Structure formats: C-alpha cells, structure tokens
Image (cartoon, rainbow, N blue to C red; front, side, top):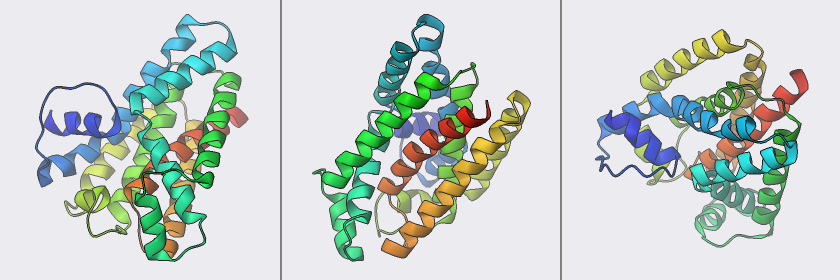
Length: 238
C-alpha cells in the first residue's frame, strides 16, 4: 500500500495523513500506480456529469474539481516550461527561469490557453463513466514512461530521484495492465493514447535539445498537454 499512497501524494492534493518514506523501493513501485491514480481522478471528475445538466456549468464544475484535486501542480509545471523554453535563452538560463517562482508572460498565456481549451472540450464532450479515467490514465502512463526512459536535466530534483531507482519494469507492468483495461472499455481510446504518447515524445525531444533532459516542470506540462490532447482527440472520434 505504501507505493500507492506515495503515488496519490505525488499526483493529487488528497489529504492522506500517512507518512511514507522516500525509499528507492517505494519510489520505484509508486510509478506502477501512476495511470491508476489518473483513473481515480477521472472517476471523481465524472460526478458533475451525473449531477448537472447544463453543459457549461458541468464543464466549469469538472474543471474546478480537476484543478482542486491536483492542486494546480501540473499547471505550475506548464507555465514554468513555457517561460523557460520560449525565452530564447541558453540551457543554464532556461533552468534558472524554470526554477523561478515568478510567472512570466509566456507562462500566463499558456495557463489561459490550457484552461480555456479544457473548458471548451469538456463542455463539448459527451462523457461516459470511463472517458475521463482513460484520458487521465493515458496521460500519466505516457508521463511515467518519460520518467523511466528520458534523462534528467538536473543533478537533483524529482526526475532524478525517480530515475535513480530504475523504475521501468514497474512502469511497464502498470501501463500494460492499464492498456488492457483501456481496450476492454473502448478500443477507440487507443487513438487518444497514441496521440498522448506522440506528444510526450515530442516534448521530451524538445526538452532534451534545450536543456539536456527532462525536469519536474516538463512532467507537469506533459500531464496538462496530454490531458487536453486526449480530450481533443476523443472529441473528434466520439
């Protein structure tokens, strides 16, 4: 149970008053549960669909719950990555900008665009009980693969902490089970997942070119962009 609790503590702002040590074993195994935490969040996001009839109010409620559950953690990563990558600076300066707690113009623009995009897609999407869980789970599995495969751009930080545990076997095991679950629910979601994987691959390559690897901010950006892209693809094919 410790790895699952650790994954919940990393990826959500749910109050879990249990102290879990950051041992290599717990960190490594926690990545197995990343897509399943996405499924859990997605199930909670379905509640407004059951309660509200108006599409606009439903989309707004879903988005607010979404931000509340993740604590804006991934949004912060997206804004930091936008500020750094679009600054036109060299590697060291980009890393310095991304670590700065202040939000610049590119960061603000990225937040407006991602929140507006999600709101529009949520209001236009006909969701079933498994729609949000599969989209969020797919984004987190793609992100977990990036953690397991791509190098860290920093000598310390979250990415390095996870990578040093060599978590790839657990990532693949959790991901394969998730894919089986996805296919059993609706095979069309494979298109969403392939789009998410392509996006994460692209952002990882851009990040490697700019700063020599990935950071926690890039992981956060991957989650936000992957979720929005998953919603977009599902809207096209539903």
